[in-house]
Length: 233
Length: 233
Ligand SMILES: [Fe+2]
Ligand SMILES: [Fe+2]
Image (cartoon, rainbow over all chains, first blue to last red; front, side):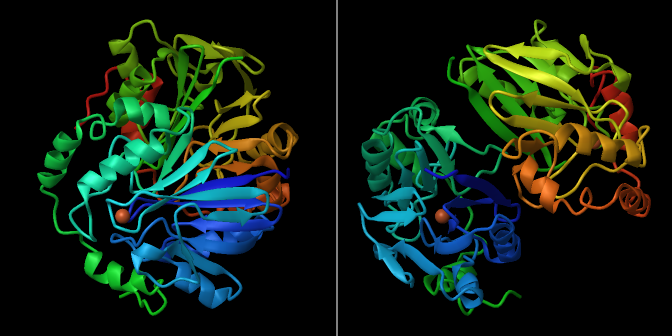
């Protein structure tokens, strides 16, 4: 087993976390952000890695993905996203699919509800879960757009995330307060949303009163096409 | 050996990283930020930890420390900083001192140059180094205030940091581009400042042309007193 390279990267404008993982010279980027492509590809290069996959946990509404931009620069890179998302990609993922990067094996776990195409990526051996917006640290993604469904989200989190070992480290797609990670055990006990009953959760999500997502009208159409034709203003 | 708890926390306003480490129910906060005291103490509490130490890598010029505020709430907590810094604290640290938190042992490594009282904290067994501003990811702290000395900084980094095992993970006090960690091997090879010759480094640091530090006139006097009498405007 070769050394695993792991880097958490932050985009301050959208508060998005991108994750770079490397093993045996191969690399994957999870949720890379358009404006950070230079930073991310430079790092991949500096660490002596070859980028194999650029992957999204879901079709983001708050930033444009860099998967299309990355592929235009590095045509050998394959993009991936859940099939149900309806977004373009080289590889469409289904529940239970395995992604191999060097010695790393990611297991795809469908957790719809924030969007209908949300997936978590699970490194079982390493005890690490990339949750996208299905579960955030003490929070979760909104459910009022993109075929969101609070009941499905609640069930998916309880059935597929909270049943993993408690010490599993959670790396979310966003954090707005400066937290960088959590664990399954901690969220199961302390997440103020998922510790509610299902009906309370559904009511709570219905009454969040959030503003219309600022970048959704730009991000969604762009992300459905991997951001390939996106031209920043 | 009990499970180690590790959390990297970010203050977006000052781009400061605070680190929470816990072992055997005891905890330490490294470089905690005044405005984030509620967040940090809540997390310590949620994780079932008892805060033992609140410690600064140096007397910061860009934010006010929360060590004084934390002690006013939790009087059993001991604050620590390098003796040479001239700042108040319950415990003044010297080169080679050891700090024990549960099963964790931090070794104090003096790396003056950004300020005259800069210290790194080294978890030798875990292979982790908290560098403060002595070395940042692909950068370093400025040397034009607080008894800064580029030549001393250069020598200290080469003699005391770059001689550690290459896989040692570096956690800095700041990052401005969304990076969260690096390694000794990586910085030794890729840090654009420390890969210069000593004279080039000194000249480079002299000609950075940085603006006068925005918060220095508030932060320095406050931090010399642990932020105890600090009243935010
Ligand atoms: Fe999202
Ligand atoms: Fe500093």
